[in-house]
Image (cartoon, rainbow, N blue to C red; front, side, top):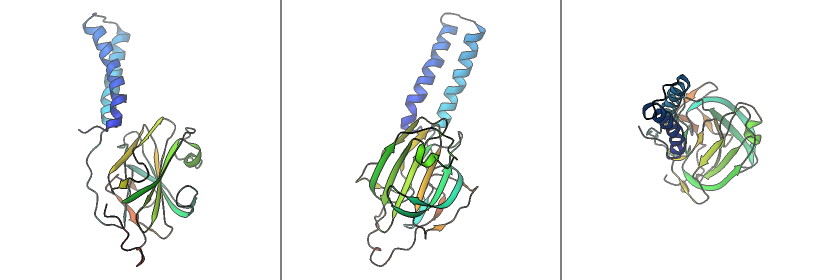
Length: 230
């Protein structure tokens, strides 16, 4: 089982505590109920950490106009909003909420060139709260496909305390490729052109790198040769 590289720091810390309690039991012969209980607890936490930070391979559907889910989870919002950060216009928002059992590695929903990145430290409200998108800790990434601009955000929640993203301006964004993860939470927003075709609905369960959220509007004749082949 492949593990997300940024998950190893958490796994190692929990595993070291587990090993410490095992050593107390087997080397020092501390057959104390509390010590044994702690060993069991941290053993289970170690196993869960391996599960939580799993990073399976995904097969991304082909199609330059396809919008692929950036996260595993449940679609909790589809609505029109204004994007003040990158698109700077009215946009179609799709929000995907990740629970503790979801794969938390995030993937590029479209291919193109990374033009914009921004990180905002912030609060840790529930991810489904309307204010979470602006008030919570979050990252913002803007990708130019050549014909359209797409914004997506990693948003922390109540438990999440660490957002990781690898993107920087000038990078090529390969659709379906990994761009980061959110440790222990929480939600990814994607903001699209208003006339994008949406193939999911609120309550739909989606898979990062595989599920098709919709399609970008057809490129104009002037834009048709601008798509980046990624």
